[in-house]
Length: 150
Picture 1 (cartoon, rainbow, N blue to C red):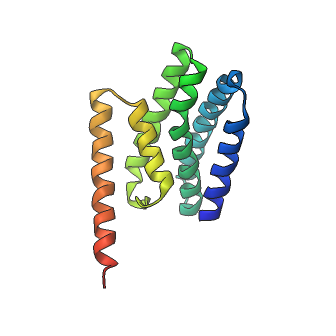
Picture 2: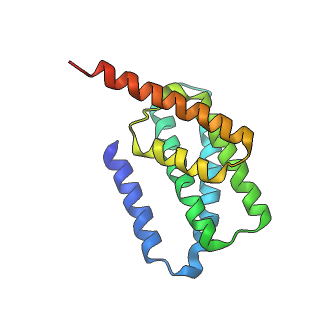
């Protein structure tokens, strides 16, 4: 599982590091589209018990959200694209809150996703919900630390 995330991040970062500046728009659009597809996949998977697949898909979504603000800064998205970005981030927040009990707050992808959502979602209600998620994850991490002590 960890090696899959490292491979995914390595490929993503390698592609980002070598792309000329003019490709940021393309990268932004691709990441936004991928995020939408993954969110739809997660919702479809809810019809059965597919916890591992959901985890992999959520990892991808969280990593996608962490990079969207960087791409947006270089790509200068249209107003419509910014609205799509907001809708994606809100959808991921909804989904993450609904499945929070499956998250491991120690995973880098989870922390990356929360940071990405914090950069994208700035409306008071979004911030309140992000704080709810962050507080929940901090509590889980604290409990994990307490139970692992000898």
